[in-house]
Length: 322
Image (cartoon, rainbow, N blue to C red; front, side, top):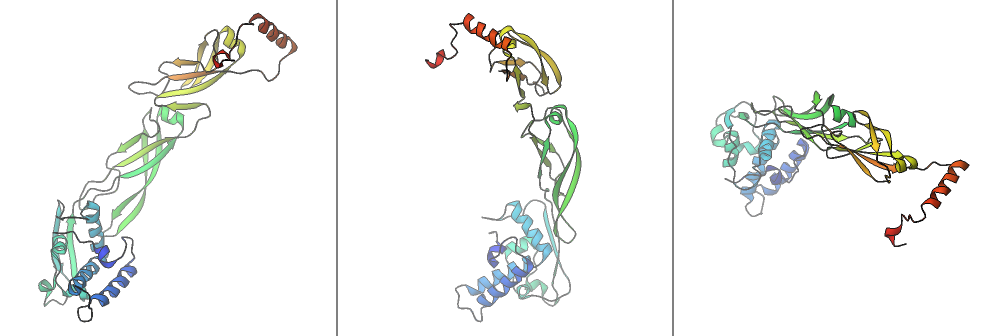
């Protein structure tokens, strides 16, 4: 059987209010009423409008219908999803115009019937009891960490929103706070999955999962590429020329690093295993940057003059052709 789009039948959006739905129904019911309408297939359209209103006017039936749309039935041939069980019963109350006509096979396959022929003699409206076993929604949250927290691991509180259905079929949003253990070595963009912490299921269905996307706050010294940590370390001209042992920071503390004699700005030194932890730990990459003093003493200036005279053939711009 074909899936029926009740929202399209009434010309309203999925976010339409009950007042919007009632207004659209009254307008279309007048337009397509067989006694006054000259439209083609007015009788069929009148039935479609009435059926759509019967479902969308009732919060519980509307919520259940929305579940089917979410299930993926909104197009092509429709078969009730696995686990859908329906049992209609009739209560007291007045009918709308939609109640007094036969409903489609699609309606009966969802709500267990309830056309006028079944209800005749009761003078009552509809009550529905059925259960669709569906899995709850997965929920996505983003958690910003300091680089040190991601490196060492930590406990954090995460707040997110889940959607659940109450006893009347209304879908409610609820804030949820969860204490989460962040493992050491998580990286930017990595997702942590917490099974069963998403939105509750419907009809006894299992809950969805919570997916936490990790974000890293900018660090004043370090940047991260994959599992490698990058840091720029300033050195003096004489440390670069003569070689030296300098202290450099790592995420896990300070270490001493040997600067090779004759190093230039831009030279990279690799500290094995000092990057982010994991099955294959990353490295720390130290980028050397030669820094000149802002002012020189007369003695230092004289020494630079002697250096220039001692190395007359050195031309750092030779690769530029000048």
